Length: 441
Image (cartoon, rainbow, N blue to C red; front, side, top):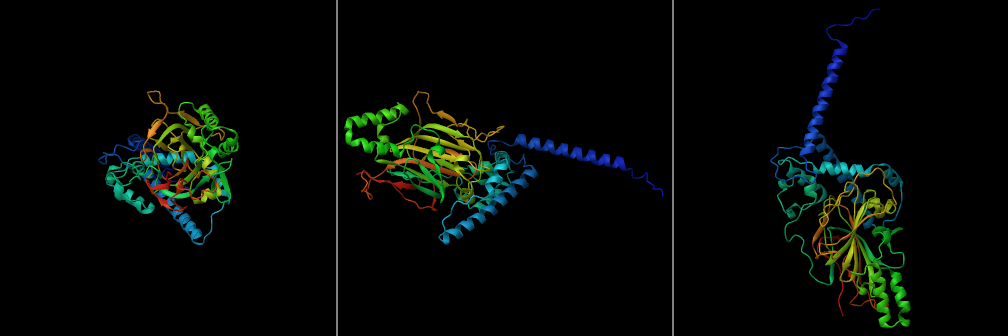
C-alpha cells in the first residue's frame, strides 16, 4: 500500500515558516520587554508620565494574580485568627512542613522579581483603578494620600506614599512614647532575667540579643542585679565610678552613666504592618541613632501562620536594626523584611540596599554595621519625635526595644514613675499615638 503526499501542502516548509514566525514573535516580545524595562523606573518613576510607557501585559497579569492570591490568603488567615480569638484560644507554636517547604523556595529572588513588577510604570488612565482595587482588597484609606492617585507612577510609589499634613498627629507629651508605624500590636512587655527572651507565640521565644546583634550598649537585668547586690558595700561615689567605667568602656563619648541605673527596665513592643497599612516608619521619641546593623537573612512571610509555625522567624529574616539613646536610656528599632518586602529603605542612609543577590546565604554571616558620624565628627544622627526615617515596600513588622522607668523599690507596683503601656495585644495603632506613658515624681 502506497501513501501519497500532496505537493500542495509541503510538510517541512510549513513547520519552518511556523518556527520562523514563533522566533520572530518571541524576538519582538523580548525587545518590547526590554524597552518597557528601560522605561520603568526602579525608584518608582517620575509620576509625570502622560501614558507614553505601558506595563508589559504579562507583568500586569502577574501583578493582578499575585494581589488576588495575597488577598485571598490573608482573608482566610484573618478569619481563622478572629475565630480563635472569639473562642478565647491563645495561638500556640505548632511547627509544620511549611517551614521546610519555604526553605526550598528562592524567596529572595521572588521578592526581587516582585519589586521589579511593582516598579514598572502604569499607564496614567489605569492608575486610579489599580489603586482603588488595592485599597478595597486591603482596606487602605485613599483619602489620606498626599497626591492624586494618577500621580503615583507605580505600585511601589503608591505603597510608600506620604500622607496629607495632619493625618498623623503626634502626641507631644514629653513623658510619652509613640507608635513608629501604623499596624497591629502583637506583643509587648518587660524583658526580665538574664536571657532577655521575647515571646514569638505561646510556647516559643527568641533572644533580644540575637535579634539586635552583639551590642556592648544593650542593658541587661544582670547589670541591675549586680549593682543591687553590691550597693550596700559601695559608697555613692564608688557606684558612680563603676557605672561610668562600664558604660565608658563600651562607648566613651556618648553613653551617660544614668542609662545603667537599676531604676530603668528594658521593654519591648512588636507591631505588625499589613499590606494596606501606611508603610513609612517614624521616630517614636526624640532620640539619637548611633549604630545601624543590616542582617542579610531569609525572607519568610510574617503573617499569623508563619509566626506560629517557623522557629526564630524574626531572627532568620533580613532586617535593619537602628540603635541609639533617648531620654530614658537605650533604644533600638528592628525593621524586619518579609516575602515580597525585601527592600527596606532608610531615608537617613539612602545608599543602603537590602535583599541584594548573593551566591550563598550563610546563616552565621556577621551583619553589616555602620556607626553614624557627622561632618563635625560628632557621633549619631538626631531625630525628633514623629520624624520619618524609613519605609517598607509593603507590610512587615517592627520590634521596638527600649529602656523606661520602673518602680524604685520592689513593693512600689503602682508607682507613678513606672512606665505603663497604653495598648493591648490585638489593638490597632497609628503613627503618633501613645504606646506608653510614665510620670515624674
